[in-house]
Image (cartoon, rainbow, N blue to C red; front, side, top):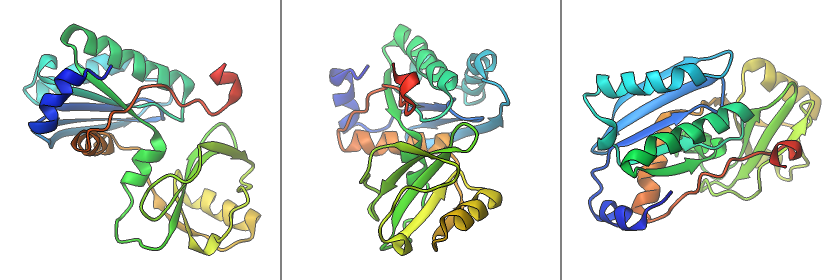
Length: 232
């Protein structure tokens, strides 16, 4: 879904229109950029998957920005980890929207979205990104202070963090309300800095898309399934 001949033009003429949306979590978000400037953003909480609302929301968002789908150069989506149904819905919608107009698709995982939202002023700390899974499961991934991943995405259960060396130099970020923060601190009996709760915003999808295209990087849209029974 990365059409190199088309993207080569945008590498040198980066006035792009990007549609980004995240259906992989309960909090759906969508953003539209026009000439590299975010001109529209919306977020909604869906207790169930947003399958019947997604296409109408996209159409309404394009109308509100006075744009047509064929004017979109890139569709950027989250590929998880998160809701199994939501991930597949987002990928299927992106493919369906892209096909009539040969629109390029970029995929980013939710860990990347959260890391993108972290304040650059935090220095000399590694980041442990957490995303709430089923019940008391958490997906996690470790990044260095340059926001480069230094571990693969995995998961742990019952608030018991994996064995992490140098915990004083680790900042925990992500799907963290105050209750989760206190449970993690009490169960693991270590001093961690818990950054304020971060959200998988579609604005970060736009930012990551622009940066990757500037670097001439491409991103595939393979879903991130951490649980083995989903991956099979």
